[in-house]
Image 1 (cartoon, helix red, strand yellow):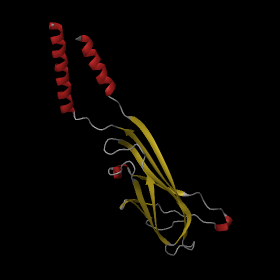
Image 2 (tube, one colour; image 1 turned 120 degrees about the vertical axis):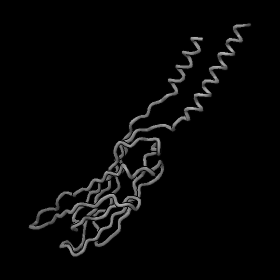
Image 3 (cartoon, one colour; image 1 turned 90 degrees about the vertical axis):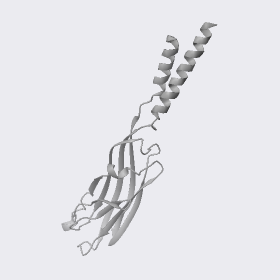
Image 4 (tube, helix red, strand yellow; image 1 turned 120 degrees about the horizontal axis):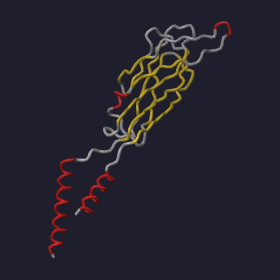
Length: 184
């Protein structure tokens, strides 16, 4: 009986599996030099092993690089139709023959917006540009959009009460069968 109990305990420990941490990065090129008042849209892929609601998100950010966007209030960035933030006001120029400054960037924390995000799906982003009357002739540069996701792979929850009942019935059946065998 002790052997049977230790065997079943070992099987239970083998079946119980812990999750593992994962990191995912997806970079999208946004096309460089643009002009005027535009709506730019793009998508980021999901990790192939990411599953809602089982996986735990530790952090998720989208970082956009840009240059020559000079509005006072910034530019709206949307994720699946909801505003997640605006680009900061940024100005660079070629005055007096100086080369263009490095691209600026805006980083958005998007962990809370990823509840419906699932494996095989896409993050749909858009950026509304409203360059009106700036000195550069309404040209601006969009560099890249980078999606970083740190998460832990979980597993589907096991229906505990039903599992324990079946496990208990199996143990009772094994005990009854071994007891019957010992009587013979």
